[in-house]
Amino acid sequence: MALIFAVGTILEPVPCVIVLAPTLVRVCTAAGFHEVQAALVLTVGFIMGSVTPPVGVCYFTAAAIAGEKIDRVARALLPFLLVEVFVMIVMLLFPPLTLTLPRLFGFIRG
Picture 1 (cartoon, helix red, strand yellow):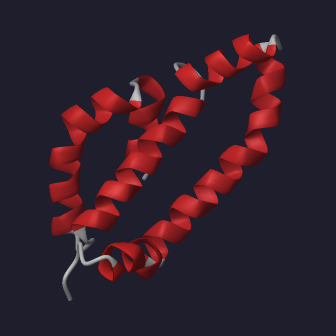
Picture 2 (cartoon, rainbow, N blue to C red):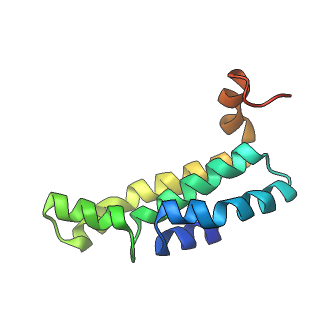
Picture 3 (tube, rainbow, N blue to C red):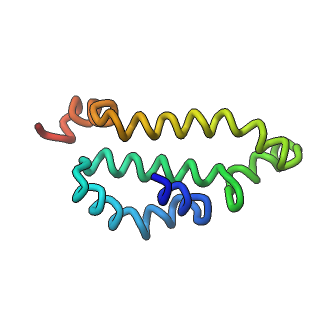
């Protein structure tokens, strides 16, 4: 999770998904995670990284749109980042939360 978050802070989410996701999903699957869960965790982790400094494109865009200083936006962003980290941990610890809807709609068998 830390690696996903760190890579997400340096690169934008789309290149991360294109370049790293195929390899990391296979690694996660070998570690015992379901492919869908691994893909969701990777995607959420990369998007979390896009909000955080130093490269956080969404972070700088939000500061520019709001017309606020970057440090003020960073302080306001901290509670949301803590909630996102909590959600990521819950996604990792409780796979049925991320796999229930795909199973319900028939995308996952079993």
